[in-house]
Length: 156
Image (cartoon, rainbow, N blue to C red; front, side, top):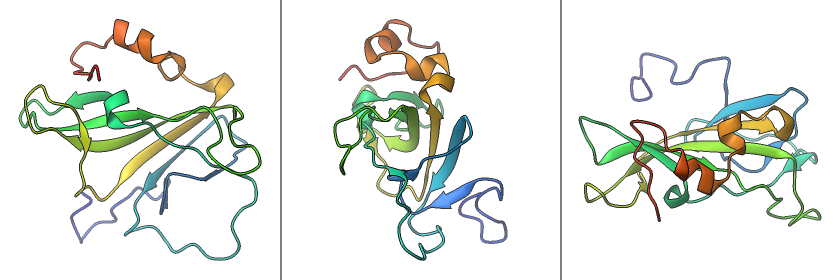
């Protein structure tokens, strides 16, 4: 759908932003948005002062699912860091949990995941800590112990 010029590439109900971080603090329990440098509307005006600057972990630390018909291609849920990345609050816990879903590739059948450099977008989903689903709150070790059926998670 993203490559078809006769359709809107993203659902109208979900915003498109040029980058995953920083994101604006929000009042509801959760937020989701697409990230696309090429398709996002231009940023106009001064930057929002109530933002949260974060980092998302490498696909090596994420949970990956591989296409059964093309096992070199997949999608990875990359956990969001729990602390502010920069600014006056750098290093402090920000109170959100999140994931960035990115397309990934691997060179070998059991090889490590790497971001697909040709991918045009990703999806970010963020929850206030108190409203995060249990799998977003689980630590990395517990996610590995309770790996979902059908998932192929890297142990790197």
